[in-house]
Image 1 (tube, rainbow, N blue to C red):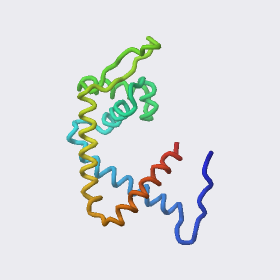
Image 2 (tube, rainbow, N blue to C red):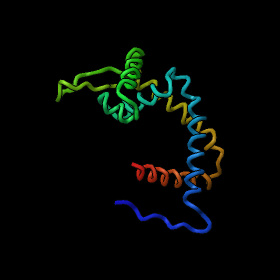
Image 3 (cartoon, rainbow, N blue to C red):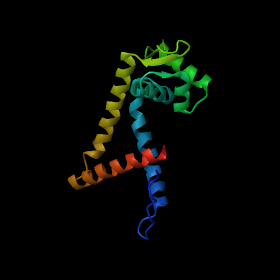
Image 4 (cartoon, rainbow, N blue to C red):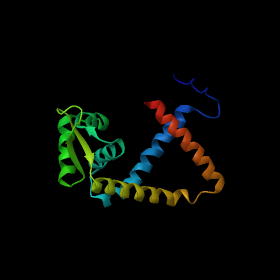
Length: 152
């Protein structure tokens, strides 16, 4: 059930907050994306691998849906990931007509090392905050996670 909408006050406009949050998120992701170069993966391949690593075994169709691309596009991405030894295909144990994508140990390692680099880069900014600012950011992060859940 949707939560009641917050009332607009004269001090804070939700649309303005959403606009500034959108801008900050884009700039943050652009800066952190620089860390991804070390993985040797394109942005789309890294994104697809992330879905496979964190989402577990997944069909090509479900991966295409998650990545919001057409099946031929996801097929090309997965073929590249397979050539790099980052994913493997296995027949579904319940429905032999289906194939599921699994991350290899190398794929999992590449992705987790990339995540660690992004977190380390972000932490360089976070660790400059005062204790009070860090507490505010921790609360704001929890709220942001709730907002993201509402988008689904």
